[in-house]
Figure 1 (cartoon, rainbow, N blue to C red):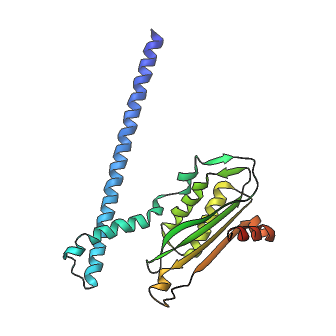
Figure 2 (cartoon, rainbow, N blue to C red):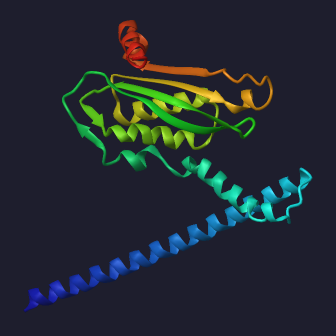
Figure 3 (cartoon, rainbow, N blue to C red):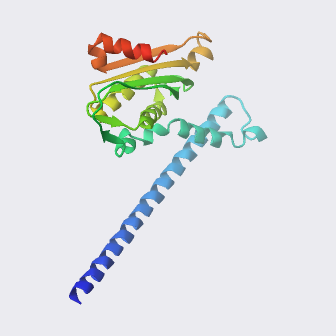
Length: 222
């Protein structure tokens, strides 16, 4: 009888703790929602000001909801600021006795040039040499998404992707190559339609061993 009563008491305590936790979570969520709503409103007002300063009539039918749509679009374009590699990799790193090269190539990416806030887009090619640990292949694409959905320059983006993989997996080596077209070179400035930019970062064995590096560069071209 005492045991049963203890179980009931403990069960009630656990129930209360869960309710308390859920209540705190709801308050945190409500607070976050309020903050996000305020940020969206501020961005919307900023776009309204920009359109007005450009000489547009912000009250005409075609532009009535443009500031709000643009604000939501900008939040999506930069959603990577709210994401971390730890969030997506915690349950996707596995012990595996594999030490040969793993390559995921032609990962599409879209980002915004931080100098002019216009897009650059292209493909990323990633390779790593496992050191008894492998990662779910889709997670490599998710890492690209996290860092590309921020205001960027291609050189830093390439380095961030390579560093994130290296820090998370501690592999024998990491290689990242990005090929992209920059609208700041196409729509403005020099206006070169066919120009593309290629950046690379080689870490570990890919940096130290020319044969390994050559194999990777050959494989991403096949």
